[in-house]
Image (cartoon, rainbow, N blue to C red):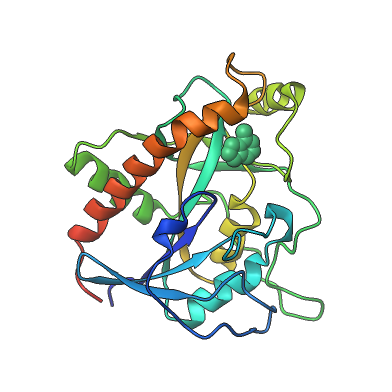
Length: 246
Ligand code: HPA
């Protein structure tokens, strides 16, 4: 059976959250951030959810990641493309670009990070490769095919937020091997794996991380978001163009 794709839409990308909304209802993990929406992209039926709610009011640490992923799964999703804005820590890439990271570091805390509650039988998922290699390959192939500059790889560090990092924290992230810093790919990626969903992160680089570069972060974000968003949009168009309709 072909995959049924879903987008998890992050900050600043609410234009992707279009289409008919399912009624919003709680599942066994509680309330999702927003209704699941169904839209058509190049003849392909896709699902989407706005991670931070509609309107954007839910902070990264307060998102009910478990409910969002379960809602997508119950709506039929098998493969998740997560749009995550990031700052760039290393000199791997620049603001305004996009990347498909291949590794993760998790600095978040206090979030519900597993689908297993007390008393449940636990599965220790293999998280050696936290992102789906087949989805990574498909996204990168689509980028290559359309000549869209999309970096293959890099380490995503998930921080707690909602504040941005101090310069010293970013120095530590770099020493730890991080290339990008964002606030939402964890526990999302691990929960997706526990639920048996394929998950890939499409990172939209909207700023240089704290202490990297001379431009104030918010100015950098303002100047770079449109470019990253346009690249991501073109990549998704290309990705769905070549797909079998499900
Ligand atoms: N840090 C953490 N999360 C982010 C950043 C950042 O610099 N930019 C976009 N999301």
